[in-house]
Length: 299
View 1: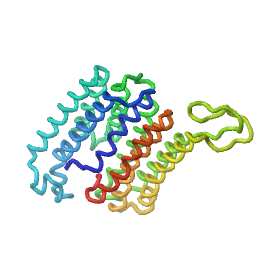
View 2 (view 1 turned 30 degrees about the horizontal axis):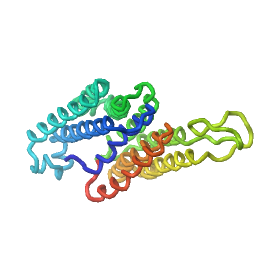
View 3 (view 1 turned 90 degrees about the horizontal axis):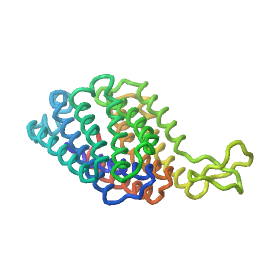
View 4 (view 1 turned 30 degrees about the vertical axis):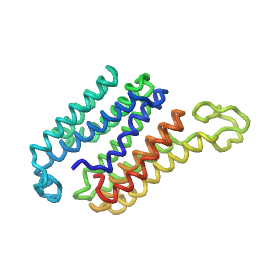
């Protein structure tokens, strides 16, 4: 029910938020990660509770319809995880709690009301963006500095969530095509620009525009480029397959690829913010997610 492999996509939100705010991860960042994990688990439990009737018809093997977990236990777990997540955010500071409260409200609103309507993908995107902002706030940085990274993360999440609406029935070509376009745009925004030889680069590895003789990016830009490519490769291939053949299995695979792509996306956002150590730490979560994903589905 709690989808262990998907948990590895959560710490990168706070780490990318800290990097975007120009902060080195510290004890309060760890508290933000703990808060994010709890709120994510609350969403997983609440999702299964809200979907128990639908799952009984379409996915009877799921924990609630199969009888392995009682509905009341799932709802209780959702409430307990939410309370613990807010308590950890409060320990990280008032700014962190200010971000965690709307995050928790968005999680509950999505699962109980919004996910079947037109606002569902937008709500899920807002939750991911707020999770990144939570990391920035807990780390003591300015929240507005994290807004561009939160927007990139939210755009990817919105696209993948739109595809996920068809994972049990399939049949949609438009959703994976649109997600593929979003993925391409985000990857291009993450890739470092080329620079002219002999000119000093700025903190993003970019030289002044309009000059001839452009060359490859500096070492920091190489890491950023590699992570941007890893993000695009993880998300794009299954999305392309789903667009060509929108069957339920390929659509589910596209959603799984989109979820796994969150880790290289978070790492690339940290690298773009000039935090290579944080980027590498985030990227190291990908093998763990892949390993556990062979045993438990991320969707």
